[in-house]
Image (cartoon, rainbow, N blue to C red; front, side):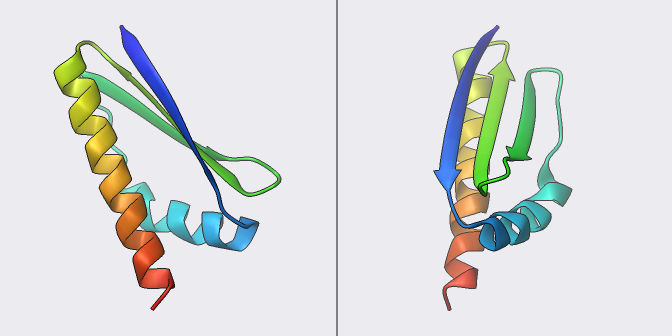
Length: 76
């Protein structure tokens, strides 16, 4: 398995809102496992484990798009 971890430094309130907005789309597949957690400072951490680079890239792109879209909506 290969993995990656991405961290976003948002304030706690923004992290909570983004997490709630992406939570329905967090699904694990046979090829990739995704975990999202928020620490006490509001850092949103995304961990992805995948069987291959294609699955890792797909899961990473999906999560990045979801988080980016959520943040853009909050900034309107």
